[in-house]
Length: 555
Image (cartoon, rainbow, N blue to C red):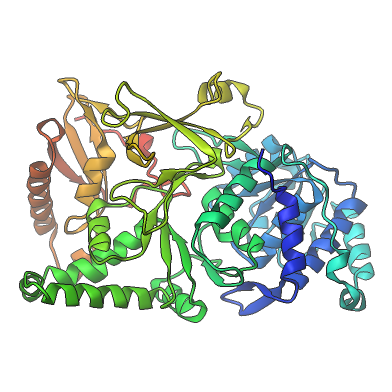
C-alpha cells in the first residue's frame, strides 16, 4: 500500500498553497486561487450532505476541461464519494449507459451536453448540476436537490468566505483501499468497460510523478488533454494540484496558434501531449524545410549541420514557451523517424506507456534517461513480465502488476478474470520486449498481430509508423485481406495535397511511390500489396487509437 493517503495529499496541498493561483480557464481569462477552490469544495460538501449523498455513492462528471470540472472532481473524492468522469465525446446512448451502469446518483454536466441527456433514461439520478453556475438543472424534477442548493448558497455567503481559513479544511477520512474512481474506457472492440481505480492506484501515479517528473512546485502548466481520460486526469490535473502548480485549462479543441499563445503566456516547464501533435510539427514545420535541396546540402556539411540543428531546437523550445524542461508523450506510439530527429537535435522529449487499468502509468523515464524507441522504464512500484522464452529478444505479451493496478472492471468479474490472472498479473494486450534495465519496447497490440503465411509475426503498427512519415500521408492502417495480402489504407494529408495542387491521379502515383519505398524498408513477409486511399479520417477512441475492428478488406 502506498504510504501517502490520497485524499490527505490534497488537503495538505490546499493548506500549503492557500493564496497561490490554482486554476485558470484560458478562453475566459478567469483565475481561481487554492483558497477559492477550497471554498467551493466546502460548499459542495455541505450540499452533498444535505441531499444525503453517502460515502462510496457514485457521482458522474460530464463536461469539457475547466476549473469547474476540476472542482467537481475534487469535491467528490474529498467527500469520500466515487467519481465517474465521462468523456464529452461519447454519444448520448453511451453516456446514458455509463450513468446507469455505474449507478451514479448525481451528475455534474456542462449545459450544452446536458441537452443531450434524457432524465427518464437515467432513473437512478437524483439531481443534475450545471458545472458553470452550480445551479440544479430541471429544478421542477429534482426539487430536493434544488431546495438544498438554494439553502447552501444562502448559507455560504461572501462574508462567510472572508472568514474561511486553511484551518477550516477537513476532508473525509478515506483509506487508500477505497474505490475512488470508475473510469470508462472507450474500448476498440465494443462497449466501454468501467475500470475501478482505488485511492491507492491514483496515489501511486501521483506520488511517482512527484518524485520523477522534473517540474518545480508552484510553477505553471497548460492542460489540453481530456481530464476524463486517465492520462490527462493524473498528470494534467491531479499531480499539479498536489504540487501547488497553477494549471491553465483549454476547454475547446485548440488551434495550433492558440496553443502556442497559451505556452508563450504561461511558460510551462512540462507539457503532456499525444504523439500526433509532435508528429505534425515534425512533418509540417521541420521535414518540409530540411528536405529542400539547399538545406540538405547544408546539413551534409560538418559544423554547419550542428548550427542548423541548434537553431531548430531553439525555435522549438520558444514555440513551447521558452521554459520547457520536458515534453511527455503518451497515449500512442511515437513515430520513429520523428523521434530520431528530435533525439538528434537533443530536444527534451520522453515517451511514456500506460493504460487506464493502471491509472494510467506503467513506464516512464525522464528525457536525459530516455532510450530510443522505448516507452520508458517500468515504474519502481510495478513489476513486469514478458510472456516469452527470451523477453530481451523475442516479443511476447507485456504483463504488469503492482500498486497502480485496478481493482477490476465494475460489475464484470468475467472480463476481470480474463484480464488479471490468478497471480495478479494484468495482461495488457500489448506485445513487446524489455532490456536488462527494464526499459519497455512495444511492438504492437496482441489483437492487431497478423500471422504471415510462413508463420512470421507481423506488427502492423511498426509498418504504419514508417508509412505515416512519408509524403502526403496523414495516417494509415495496415490490414490483411482474405487472401493473406497486406493492404495499407491511407488517409491523405489533404492540406499538403491542396497546397501542391495534386490531382487524384498524381496522388495515386505518389502513394505507389510511397509503397515501393516502404517495401524496401520492411521485411519480405511485411510487403504491402497496394495502398488504398481512405477519404475520411479513421474513427478513433478518445486516446486517439484507431478503431481497427471497423476496417476490413475482402480483396
